[in-house]
Image 1 (cartoon, rainbow, N blue to C red):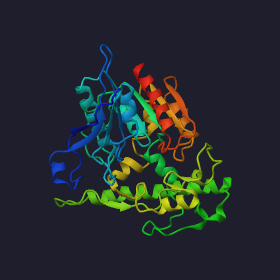
Image 2: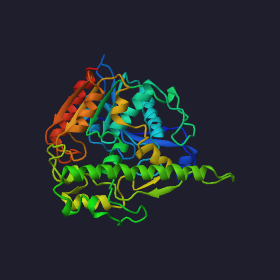
Image 3: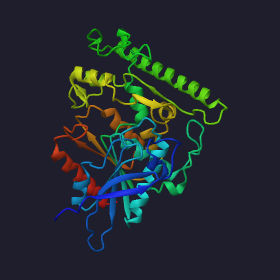
Length: 383
């Protein structure tokens, strides 16, 4: 049977923060964009749609769109308003965008809708459904009104998680480099806390404890500075004064598990998902493009800080829908402890499927994509 054509979805969304885009058109009429396939429905069959979204990555070409459509599941890869640039990203606004996608699919007549939480989309899906079931956010973390309503967040019927990490705040807490000694100098370094310094390897329990404490301390210092700086900006009384500003966080990919395969062991190779081996992981840590490198004060609070509301397992525990979890056993970004956190959060209504040898993106692994699509479609049809 021939696959349906890929279609473009153009969806209006509510305005967000002032000046959140450089595009005048986007500010005048905020929109998000998706790509989707909708298979023909056999007579009498329920119509099921899946929606896969990430806070900032472009998922319009997601690898599950065609395989799920071939198995009778309409699937949309949807982008948020922050696609490709998370400098100003507010997770509270992203769930509003996700809700607009759910509303779009409901308007097409789909009986059941499932969120696919892939990678950073996992914590997003959990955050969305927790607020859809129990909306409790009235204000952003900086005190501004959130302008969220139940109509913005229609609940879905299930969540499928694949290679899903626990959330952006978790990544920042576990990946931030504590060897940075000067927040204004990307090359500053305390060698005694540098995981890329061969003198600190193999890692000892004492080193790892100091490293973890150093990560917590650096993150706390940044959070305190953000609070102070926001207070300074908001204390200005002159009309038109700045309410937010951007800053850099250097070296945000220092993950000991990338360099020591005995820590939280799975089938992963040495290095980062973005760079092979120790040298590759070090290059990622120093890269100008990496996680959280440039962020605004308010975006930092919403995404990366310890106060972020987008904690994946914490939110999943406050949902009631069935959950299907895919563990990629060769992933260098999610680990057995990640799997266990998701399983605890949805105990009694979650099932885990191991994709043996699966890397984070299932790159070059079409047989595992097919396995995932088979399992996912069967589970969705049974909801």
